[in-house]
Structure formats: structure tokens, C-alpha cells
Length: 324
Image 1: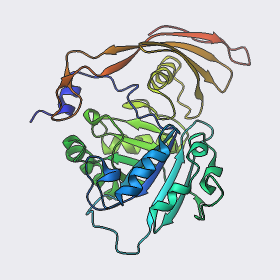
Image 2 (image 1 turned 30 degrees about the vertical axis):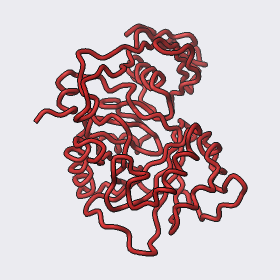
Image 3 (image 1 turned 90 degrees about the horizontal axis):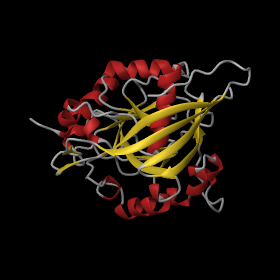
């Protein structure tokens, strides 16, 4: 059976620069069936889902539904929905969690503050949100895209992966409604770091989590850090490839200049080094389906065409510079 995933893999489509852009994630537990647009096509009150989408628009917050792998029974009447808010910028990442009987209360959050990484936004825009938020101290959240109504590849490949991770004791595993890039299935995002991965196996995920436990990043299969726009995602991964840097919080995208189809991205290291990365948007060829059942198309690809070191480390060490 030909799928968007097999087409993408056969064409060796690059993964870098394909992660969803989301400095902050708002995740609401909602078991039961999910439709293609799950926020308004699930057992969550569609009016609440629609209002959450509107409240988050333009704030840097991405709203999604999550559920534990396995049978997707509805929550019993009166049950609470587990909620997570996670911010992903390096050196400032965090997760807070609560449980609510009424997800509609989330509309009292200060979405603009949360998108900027200010956990004070959990108190609400008018200090009127009474939720009891706690710092989340469990394992990193592993959010596997499994929504078959969105794309069959997510169900065929994502659900078995989520089940295998759960059976292996990866306690932070959840299914998620949509993170983009169906053709890279199975695909997932790890929070609070915000790194997304595609075409992964359960062992890949375990290796990624082991590295993150040491505050290191595995770049194999990495689609990018969701804190950045797509050119920044590609630029950060290019600097990691060039320098061998694997510290999870070592690199920051400090500036992206110009606009499509070409950008100059400035990437800074915590030790003072700075690089300028030239990124070009090109149309992938030959045409391929971006999703199962969709017409053939040419998705935009982020190509790194140059990396230039512009500032040495603070201790004067020589900087390795080059081009890709």
C-alpha cells in the first residue's frame, strides 16, 4: 500500500526544519474518538475547543488534545482532565500541570504571557484563574501523533509506537492529535525541550530520552526545536552538525532576518560563539503527497546553503567555520 510516509521515505525527504512552531504547548487530556480537527470534533465541548483556538491564535501557544495509549474510553462523568502547559525555549523550559473538571476554565489563562514563557500567565489575564498548578517533575512528555482521522499513517505507525513505548515503561508517553508532518510518521515531540522527531523506532525514542536525561540532544531523525520558526530550526541543526555541539540548551536562535525564500539566521552559543546561517526555501521535487489522499504537491523545504562563524568564544578559542 502506497502512503505519504512511504513516498517521503523513498524520496529521502529531509527532516530538518519541519517541526511545528510552538514556543509553548497547551495540552488537554480528552480520551474517546478524535476527528480530523480534534479540538472541535471530539468529546470536548466544541465551543470550548473553538474558543481555545481563538484565544491561542498569534500568541505562540499551540493547543492540542492528548490521551493515554490503549483503549480510548471516555472519561467517566465528573472526571478531571489532566492539563499540561510546557514552554520550550532553551534555558527557560518548564512544564506545569493541573487537573480540571471543566476545560472551559482554561479560557481564563493569559495566553500572550504563556507564549512568551511567563508561567505567571497561568494565573489568568485578570488573576482570575483558580487552578492549582504544580511544577511537573515526571519523565519528559513523549507526544506521539496518532490521529488517524487526520492521516492514516499517524494511526498505522503512531499508535503501535505509542503502545510499545508504554509497554516498555516510558511513563511520559501520550498520544496527541496533531503536530504536523504526517508523511514523517511515526512522528513525535518531546517536552519541555520541544524537539520533534520523525521516522522513529521505540529504541530511537529511548536513546533520545537517555540523552535528554543528560541534557544532550540526539540530532538523528530530528525535525527541529518547536521554539523556532522553520528557518531557525534548520539553522540550529546545521550548527550542531558543523560543531558537534549536543548540549540541549547550548544554542539559541537570536534573530531571523529577511523573508521567504531566503533568510539569514543568527545562532548563538552560551559560550559566546555566534554563527550566521543562510537558509533557502525550495520546492521539494518530484511532487509527492503531503498527506494520504491529498493531491501531489511540492512541500517547501528548508535548505542550509551556508554557515559562517562571526564571533569566537569568550575565552578566545578558535571557532570552526565552514559551509554545508
